[in-house]
Amino acid sequence: MSDEEDDLILDELDDAELVLQMHDDLYDGMSDEIAEAVHILLKRDWTPYDILTKALVEGMRIVGIDFRDGILFVPEVLLAAGAMKKGMHILKPLLVETGAPQLGKVVIGTVKGDIHDIGKNLVAMMMEGAGFEIIDLGINNPVEDYIDALKREKADILGMSALLTTTMPYMKIVIDTMVEQGIRDDYIVLVGGAPLNEEFGKAIGSDAYCRDAAVAVETAKEFMARKHNQA
Amino acid sequence: MDLLSKLLAEKDWLMADGATGTNLFNRGLEAGEAPELWNVDQPEKIKALYQDAVDSGSDIFLTNSFGGTAARLKLHNAQHRVRELNKAAAELGREVADKAGRPVVVAGSVGPTGEIFEPLGPLSHGEAVEMFQEQGAALMEGGADVLWLETISAPEEYRAAAEAFANIDAPWVGTMSFDTAGRTMMGMTSSGMVEMVQGIENRPLGFGANCGVGASDLLRTIQGFAAANPEVPIVAKGNAGIPKFVHGHIHYDGTPELMGQYAVMVRNSGAKIIGGCCGTMPEHLVAMRKALEETPMGPPPTDAEITEVLGGFSSASDGTGDAPAPKRVRRRRK
Image 1 (tube, one colour):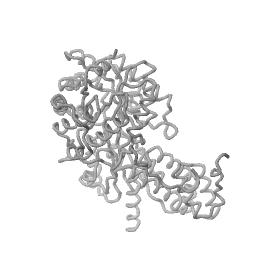
Image 2 (spheres, chains in turn cyan, red):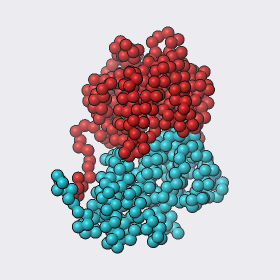
Image 3 (spheres, helix red, strand yellow):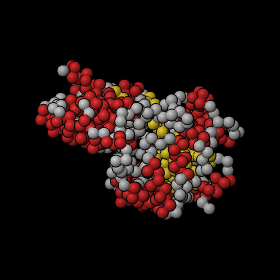
Image 4 (cartoon, chains in turn green, purple):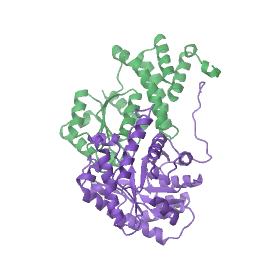
C-alpha cells in the first residue's frame, strides 16, 4: 500500500457516506469496489431496489451528465457501465425475487439498411448501465422484427438508430406500421443517430430524438416515470 | 518515391475527392448493401464514381473499400472476400487514374472495424492489426498509391492500422472523425492527435479530420491541429453541411458556393490536402477547386468569420487550449 487513500475501508463508512462513495467509484469505473459496496448494503438490510436506484442509478446519472457536457467520453462511460453491470449482476436475481418495479424493457436495433451499430451499442450499454433491460436486435432490422420483439418481450420502449441519411426515413415506416396496427401508443419510441435531429424526430412521429447515449437514458427514464404516473 | 509524397513536395495544396456513399446511393446502391460488393458486381459504376472525382479536378480519390475489413464484411457474410474486393477496388482506381492525363493518386480507403478495443470491448490489438494488414495488402496489390485510413475515433485503432501498414511497408494517410464536443467519440482532441501522429514510428504522409459534425467544427479542428505545429501535412475532408429532412428526402444543406468558401478557409487555416466527405458531390468539388485556384492565400478565419459563413459550432469548446478541463471533485479515492 503505497497510497494511504487506497486504505479506504468501505464497511467503515456509514450508509450515506458509502452511497456517495459508490457514486464516485461508479464514476471511476471501479467494478470490484461497486460489488463490495452492494454486498455491504445488502448486509445492512437495504432493499435491492433502493441499492439499485439510490446508489447505482443515481451514480450513473452523474456519469451521464458529465458525458452530455463533454467532460467524460465514451471510454470512461463504458468503464462506468461495466462497474454498474457488475453491481446489477448481484442485484438482478434479488430484484426479481422481491418483485421490485422494473425500470423498463427496451427493444433496440439499427433500422433496415443500416449496418452502423457503434452508436446503438453505446446506447444499449448505457441503458443497461442505468438499469434498463435491453433486447438488442442488432443491425438491419425490418419493421416486422421490431414489432415482433416489442410484442414478444412486452417491452416498454422501442429504440431505433440510423447513421445514414438514406436509412433515416425507414424509421417513419416502422412508426407508420405501428400506427396502422393500432399499437403506436402502447410504446415509447425513441430515435437516434448522427444525422438525425429533433425536427426529424417530430416529423416522423417518434416520442423523442435523443442526441446521444446519455440523453437517451434520461429521456427513457422521463417517459417511464410519466407512464407510471398514468397507470 | 510514392506519388502522394511527390505531389505534396511539388504543390502548395492538393484536392481530394468528395462523398463515396452519397454518390453510390445516387447511382442506385440499396441501403444495407455492402458498397464493396460493387467493386466486383458493378465495376462500371465504381469507375464512374472515380471518374467523377477526376473530372471534378481531384488530385486524389479514395477507393470504394471503406468497409473492406473482415470485421465489416462479416456483416454481409463476405469476410472471406477481403482480398478480392479490396484488390478490385484499387484495380478499378488504377485504371481510371492511369487514363487521367495528369498525376492522380489512388488512395486505398480503410475505415474503422466498428469494434471497440479491449479491455472495454472485444477487439484485441493483434486482431485489429491482422485485419488492417489483410485489407491494406490487397489494396496495394491492386495498385493503390497510398493507404488512406479514415473516420477513426479510437487512438488504439489508429495505432493498430499504422502498425499494420508498417508491416507491409505501405505509405499512408490517416484521419479521424471529431464529432463529440470537438473531440472524437473516444475523447481524442485535435492537439492530442498531433502528439499521437508524431509519436508513430512510420509517420503518415498526412493526418487530419474527416466527416464529423459540420464545416464549422471541422475548421476549428483544423485550426487546433495547426496550433500544435505539426510536422506532418494536414488533411481536411468535411461534410457538405448538415443533413436536413425535406419532404421525405434527405438533403445536405451545404451548397457548392459554401463548400468553395469552406475549402479556402481550411487552406488558410493550414490544411494542405482538402476534400469533402458525406454529401459532397461533383458540383461541390468543381466549386472547391475553382475557389482554391482563384483565391489567394489569406490569414486563418476567426471564429466569428467561420460561424458567419458556415454556421455555429456544436459545442462551446473543443477540449484544447489553456482552459482547464472541467472536472468533478472526488471524495477520497483517486
